[in-house]
Length: 345
Ligand SMILES: NC(=O)c1ccc[n+]([C@@H]2O[C@H](COP(=O)([O-])OP(=O)(O)OC[C@H]3O[C@@H](n4cnc5c(N)ncnc54)[C@H](O)[C@@H]3O)[C@@H](O)[C@H]2O)c1
Image 1: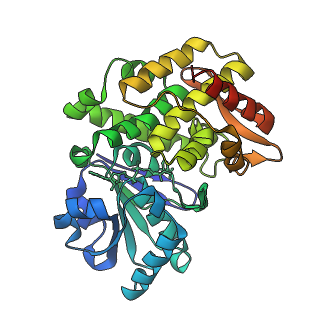
Image 2: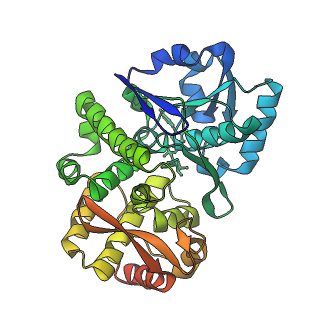
């Protein structure tokens, strides 16, 4: 299945027809693959046809230093305005590829083949791409759409269990903010069910792609509804950096903190957090962590959703119903203290 989605300045082709079509989408003579050291060993036959830039795997390499190294190699390959960059990998690779493609020669075409569940349901979609700077996640970045995204759930067969869980954190997020029926479905199953059943897995990926796609086409530049996708990410990003946790695990904890904040600030029924804890545990995601509030606040005050002394926090009314509430730093700090002191429940 394939469809095109138009943004004001770009058209994205979403294709669910598999990686076998990559050469048709991006001919080898005019394209360069960017991938990481783990993915490169898995897809030797695919990348063998292309000029390839291999970056070290791991979030700690999503940096300007790696961008510089990619740029050197693009210059060696004599890449020009019509060269297409293909990001083949997880969200770390798609983020850095989209960013490099947006700044190299002031912008060259790019497309993605996401190879993790997290990248398929979230990171590859929407055109927000960037790198980390010191303790600050995605501090340098752009919003520019890829020309194509090629989905192939079979690529997930080699994925480690922890990476499946990380992907489910973002899927659970869609349930929390938009889709109570999805949340209820997730509450009945486990990672193994989706891993072993291609049809529900493909339907799940498609459903999340549709949610993300719908949101970013309504609000590409994140002035309104797109902010809801940050549910769990405000505290989540700070936790990810401070405790060196994978993105999905940090988002899981961030969603619980957002529930605590929603209880205090917006009267959310405490049962919602209990339901969320059950679902997170089902997908082997963490539900508690001892927090160091002062250090987290040092990172949080530079959050991209900050204005003056408040952050646009994403809170819940109920499962499937999220909204934006500007919260003073002091309230966030108190919520982090309470979350930590209460043993996170
Ligand atoms: N741009 C966005 O809108 C957006 C949204 C969510 C997350 N993100 C970013 O995505 C990143 C996290 O993405 P991720 O969880 O995919 O991490 P990742 O890209 O680091 O991949 C996780 C691990 O899986 C390995 N891997 C990738 N594909 C594999 C496969 N098919 N088989 C076996 N191993 C494989 C990688 O080498 C890596 O070791 C973070 O940097 C986060 O900030 C971006």
